[in-house]
Length: 396
View 1 (tube, rainbow, N blue to C red):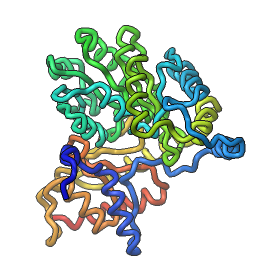
View 2: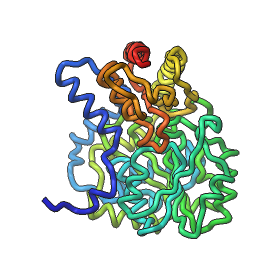
View 3: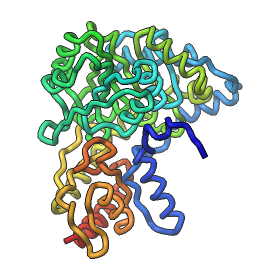
């Protein structure tokens, strides 16, 4: 069967692949603990669910505007002003079916064949693949545990060429949990001022899950704001992964380009979700911060447990709900049947031996590492790391 060549340009997301393998084992009766997917294990707050029920009863069941309901776009502008001190108008906002679609819209709207997109490592698995779909060239800039998995201005400057179209990063970062401070962002902004043709995508989906202070956006620097596209959504901060709602804030010309693309792919996001999102974004954020308090406890416990596993080194995450330890000391080891050659082998060994799912670092641009989520119950986290420690002890 002759399928489109576009399918050869990119890979299946390793996060979804590992989750699928875990589900297959679970279907066979195996007790698999999932530390692979980036999904809060909390239920959507009641007031948001109530808003959805009301929207159904009020018959919000018809096609929606491609860029989102006017009241939702206004609510997003209100959120930016309240939380980020950023001024946007509804014409800057496009609502999509999840932040992943928002990212796809922006990348397809900006990147032409052969143009370069700078992505600091580690990065979310979908970034590089979307660039490949757009026929762009991924330029990785490697960070390190010593730098807190953040790049500096000199590294950014060195990576920019006449072909550079876009810089794409997240803060807080998936998978490392790195959070850029205002001073660190300002240093990057100095570089961008010297290169006025470079756009910046700032993925801020983990904005509320921050363990070190107030969230800072690179869009706060007014002289580069028109080149910054903020991507955000409701999945992480409001425990609304299945509701599928993301959004961008961008220059109106970019927003119109994304609206044009989305009009041919999916049209507008789900009506019920949009009406619920208005309530989520304009209501008290107490439920979100209660989640963060629990993530803070889990982060502490996870770091304690990882510290008790020989051969694993780990930087404490500043945000999001993952750890991204270096596991390369296990490469080349074996339990007599399986040889661990890389992080993919390491993850499959843990899945099949410890029955714990994780995601290999290669997918995030850092092959020495593995991503583990702590978006699971404290009991499951403790049980999982007990199993991991036991399974790794068998490797010689």
